[in-house]
Length: 149
Image (cartoon, rainbow, N blue to C red; front, side, top):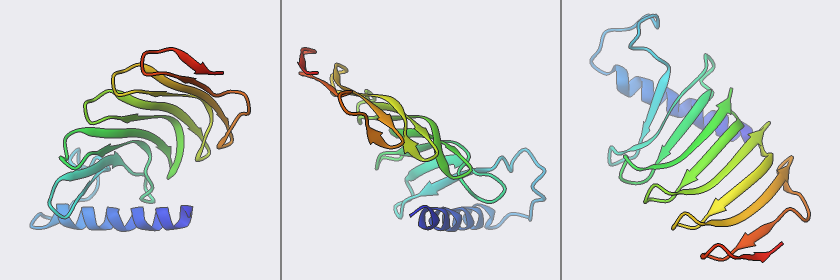
C-alpha cells in the first residue's frame, strides 16, 4: 500500500512539475521560486492539495488537502519522507475541527479527539501502533454529556 502511495505521489510530482514548467525556462533548483511545494489540482483546475516534497519526491512536512472548492481546508497531515508522522487535523467544511490525532511511523498513535460540527467533543480515544487501546474510548452526546466510558 505504501509503495502504491509513493508511486502515485511521485507521478503527481512529475505531472505538477511538468505543468508548472510549461512555457518557462529550465530552472536550476537553486532559486527561491523552486521551494519544493507541489500543488495538486483536480481535472476542473481546483486545488486538491499542497505540500512540500523531499529530494526523492516524498511528501515531507505538512500536506494540506482541500475540499472540492479548492479553498476550504479539509485536512492538515504531517509527513516525514512519505510517512505520516506527527500531528494531523481534519476539518468540517465550516472550518470546525472534526478530528485531531497523531501519527508515528504511518500509524495513529496517542490521544485522538473527534468533534461534532458544532464544536462540542464527540469522542476521545487513544491509539497505539494504529489500534484503539481497549477501554480508552469515551463518547459524548452533541450537548457534551458523557454517554459511554
